[in-house]
Amino acid sequence: MQRLITALIAGIIFGAGLVVSEMVNPVKVQGFLNIFGNWDPSLILVMGGAVVVTLISSRFILRRTAPIFADSFQLPVSTIIDRRLIIGAVLFGLGWGLSGYCPGPGLVNALINPNEAMVFIPALLIGAWIGKGVSA
Image (cartoon, rainbow, N blue to C red; front, side, top):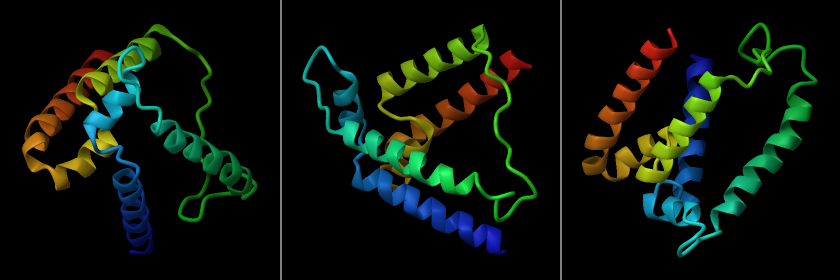
């Protein structure tokens, strides 16, 4: 139960951060990605803030022998940049750029704007299903 409450609190904080930073607004995200048009650089502060928090907190977190709610850390062991990784990154970036949503902000926006979610969530699920089939 404690794990679920912690996950709920973390999710609420993450979702609130997405709303406050306007990452749930596809027009804002597309304006940031439109470097050759009417570019909106304000999301650099959001991304920069996330990088700074991660750099500082990960140093303290990884000093622990294990996470609070698990037996061990599960860190990636592969450093290989292969064709699957590149194709996945390109598809993710294209989807993000075209729609203005990546999965986290898209799901948060489903609560704010359910009409758009009726298109985004099925597309997200179909894309995940196709991706799972291709990578298997």
